[in-house]
Image 1 (cartoon, rainbow over the protein chains, first blue to last red):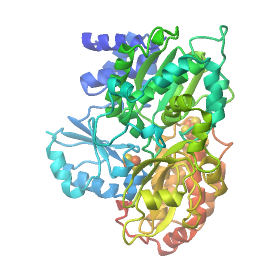
Image 2 (image 1 turned 180 degrees about the horizontal axis):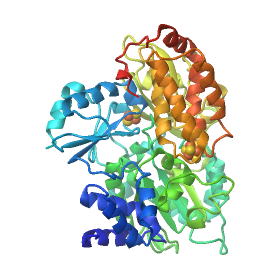
Image 3 (image 1 turned 120 degrees about the vertical axis):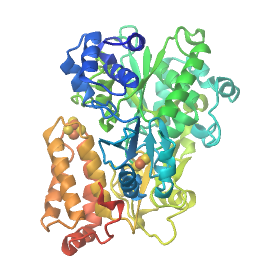
Image 4 (image 1 turned 90 degrees about the horizontal axis):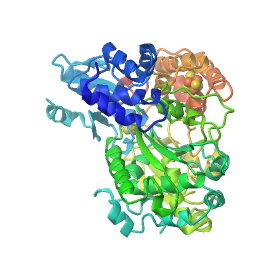
Amino acid sequence: MLSAEEREEIEAELQRYPDRQAVCIDALLIVQRHRGWVSDEAVRDIAEALAMSPAEVDAVATFYNRVFRRPVGRHVIFLCDSVSCWIMGYGRVRAQLAARLGIGFGETSADGRFTLLPAPCLGACDHAPAMMIDDTLHGDLDPERLDALLDRYS
Amino acid sequence: MDTPLTQHIRPDREPLDLRSYEQAGGYQALRQALTLAPQAITRLVTEAGLRGMGGAGFPTGRKWSAVPMGPDAPRPKYLVVNADEMEPGTFKDRLLLEGDPHQMVEAIVVSAYAIQADVAYIFLRGEYVLAAQRLQRAIAEAYAGGYLGRDILHSGYHLELYLHISAGRYICGEASALLNALEGRRAIPRAKGVRTAVSGLWGRPTIVNNVETLCNVPHIVLHGAEWFKALGRGQAGGTKIYGVSGKVRRPGTWELPMGTPMREILEAHAGGLRDGLALRGVLPGGASTEFVLPEQLDVAMDFDSMATVGSRLGTGTMIVLDDQTCPVGLLANLEHFFARESCGWCTPCRDGLPWVQQTLAAIDAGRGAPEDLELLAMHTRFLGPGYTFCGLAPGAMEPLQSGLRHFREDFERHIRERRCPWGADHGDHLH
Ligand code: SF4
Ligand code: FES
């Protein structure tokens, strides 16, 4: 069931669009903000609230890369793997993350701290290589300072 | 004022709030616009020669002219700001959104008034968190100040403005796919032939414009078409936010006269290549443009001049390829991106791009065969214009086909020597 808060936030979004289905993506992101990810149960809850079928909601949910259909760690690292970051040493950063956290793309560290995902160009190419951890952008990544950066996230 | 778009932007401080924006002359263009007939603004924008800065370069005034006007026009009408900056190597709209959110809001109200839109959406990529916060605040201030909502500045014009945070995927930058995303569907492009200006969001007249394009509009209203044209060098008018990334001394963005030569941007502004590196080529405007070669650097970076060297202005943010970076690896990276971001709707793109990417990755890893090059060249034709449902696949083929031509020798060496001549640690061969 949607929580009262989730329901309220979805209702607020409904004011901004002329039909209920339009809120589908916002609803997915709202539920994800509250629960960390979008479970099958969440898909059914949203479908019910928006008078859609669960299959319709899932078709939308699985299209967008910022909707998580599996549980993620406490922090999500979006590492840019696009061209400018690739030129500037994305590969070394990725190797360093793999060595330090023991994870590749799509995986969560054993301690549940980080999930690593690839991101298309983050629009920070003048500070390549770049990544986001949760809502914060980190640019000019240097493998030597990466450990200290990760230590700030518990 | 030769840098209208960035005049209030300072990297080291918060953007102007409503009060300071007003004190700096903000919302004067809106006041002026509201005294004009809507069509007069479209005419001004047409005369100024403003073109789409999201990559396609379509004349903005012409786009707007297709919107049904007058009391019988279908309603509501929509203006959508494409703030889904995701073209690899592109980081110019971020500057405008984070740096001067009120300029964005004013640009939206003025442009919406020109087409008599009732509702405007900013379609913002989810990763632009700081831009979202700053826009949200500017929108709230603008509502409180009477610049949005009912009866704007007592003109009788109403506009609601909403910020939509996207859930990802590059294809959302395609205008018709973006509309599907706004409607809460999968972001699959819509059939061509139906003009969104007539039937767009929920079947109503809709205009989609890029951030940088719209930000020019208030300045054109305030200072006129002639002033705008005179800002540019040569034939093209206005300014452009250019950017450079890659191994240059000072990567960054600069607002310069439209038509500034590529060499000047690379050398005077970006400081040239880092010590010990030589230039091999430049992707002038994001990942879906063709390489410009070192001997072509004197080309003016505007829409028409870029066509004379067989490329496109695109987004105007250049990606620099130096001689210590493997061109085959770079192309493999680009095609990996396009293969992943294909929306999957049409077969040539859905199946062809992964194939292209795997072939490139195999060549890069020393597992290529001589006939691969012909096969790749063939794919650049069959994934080119006319064979796919939208422009993603043809865009993906632009760097590849020019890369195959210009860096043929590098491809052949990979195949002959069965290894990457740049060694295994360029990008660690991870694509
Ligand atoms: S060309 Fe690619 S992105 Fe465009 S509609 Fe076809 S599959 Fe989708
Ligand atoms: S390519 Fe990584 S931020 Fe643009």
